[in-house]
Amino acid sequence: LPILSKMAKPRAVGLYGVAYSFISFIVVAPSLILMSVMPLMATSSGERFEKLLRRTEHSLAVLGAAAVMITVLFAPQAIAILSGHRFLGASAALRLLGLSCYFSFLNTALGFAAVACNRHHRLVVVSAIGLVLNVALNVVLIPKLGINGSALSTLISEFIALIGVRWVFAKDVRTKVSLTRLSLRPVLVGALVTLFGRYVLLHSWHAPVVTVLWAPAILVLYFGILVLIGGLSEEMTFAAEKVKSHFRGRNWFSST
Image 1 (tube, rainbow, N blue to C red):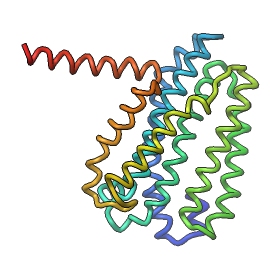
Image 2 (cartoon, rainbow, N blue to C red; image 1 turned 135 degrees about the vertical axis):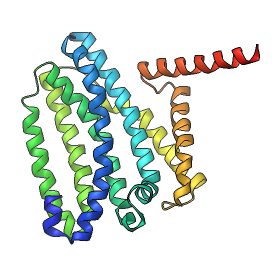
Image 3 (tube, helix red, strand yellow; image 1 turned 180 degrees about the horizontal axis):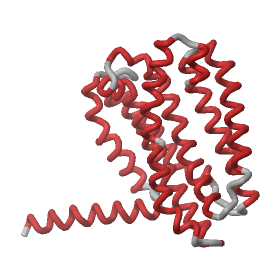
Image 4 (cartoon, rainbow, N blue to C red; image 1 turned 90 degrees about the vertical axis):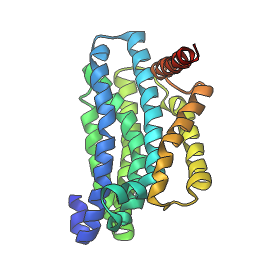
């Protein structure tokens, strides 16, 4: 925002501020999750630590893909409901920032894990490089693309930061976690459900506000497909089984 305010008009700054406020709310989620997992990481080592990190990253990959999916599909509806129709110009920027959330989710887990095992010092260097890269990208892209250029800068910076943090983490902590393999099913299912939602349910990237009512159904479809193909983490699978057993119990009770 400081760079954008120097290079764009006040209205553009306001639009980007609206888009960024949504993302600021979303990226709190992984930190809250990791705060509960942090004590377990701090007291784990070896294979147990690696398994815990893998399960955490898997869960965040699933949740991150869901966050991206909902943001991409319902950006204009969310803006219209919470900020008003005059801020709909922030929709594209919000979608780009929403995509960056996926990398932020995965990055958060690695950051917390590095702190848990006291190997976070070199991550500061990666963060500094990411900041410089973000500034450079903003200077190049804002004059050409406006607020979308600033959002694209954030997306690229988060992706590069994740690569850097993953490399440093693997070298310092020596824990093997394949983010590509963990991301494959959530990302593919998220992309397919997004296309289904866009072309079958919403019929437009700027659908009416009322179409936000499709959001729960789209989430159910996303998680349902992941359940069928075994794409949920162990914790999520356990939670899904508990929910299913709960509803089965209620149906059995009502039938008796």
